Length: 127
Image (cartoon, rainbow, N blue to C red; front, side, top):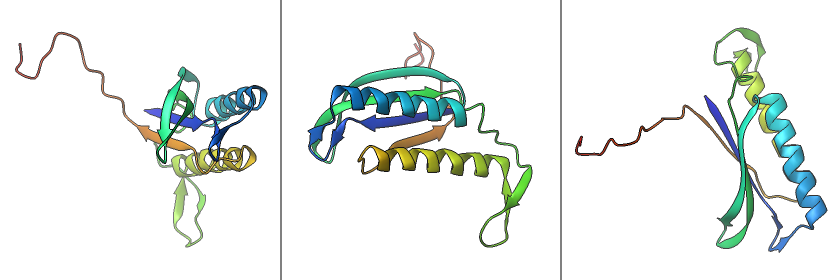
């Protein structure tokens, strides 16, 4: 499993100052590391949100703290059982939502899935 989290620097159409941007990146990496699992990759670059280019930061976790096993740990609002994975995922989303609000962001992008490793020298035609 891997957890990909992407944030942008802009607040509205203006970039946040360098100190705040660094703090936002550090806090995002800390949340991912604490709730999703150790980060394995982080990178900055240019992204596009709502048609506007902005500096972006992506951090990828190994997802080890989001155990996919279903061990009931509580119930949801409808009385349905909640598993460990659901609770940990909700914790991650809540913490990232708090960061989004704290740093004036409309949202933070999260993708959770199984990476596919494509080996070199294998082409679509099998050659």
